[in-house]
Amino acid sequence: MSQTSVLVRLDREGAATGSELAAGEGVRPQSMAAILGVLHERGLVTRASDPADGRRILVSLSEAGRAGLRGARREKGRRLTQAISDELTPEEQAVLAAALPLLERITRHV
Image (cartoon, rainbow, N blue to C red; front, side, top):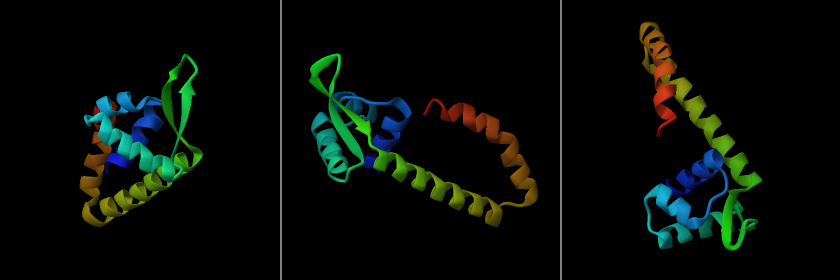
């Protein structure tokens, strides 16, 4: 879960240092270094020197990381659509559809 969370954060917010990611995810820098090591080995993130400060290393989502997130999001969407269809009555589906703008608004802050 923490690896996915880091990939989503990089996709949403762009390149960041390991320290910035650790603070954002609420983990120790050492734990983030381990997470980033695995993601880098799998080719899901890239590392590069910060053009503004060559001492800092910026981590970015790679194309493979983006593709993986797209696939995971498609699968989640498919499963959610199927669950809504299987579990909710047409009336409940209408209530859910009416609530979507509210859900979208609050998810921007999560």
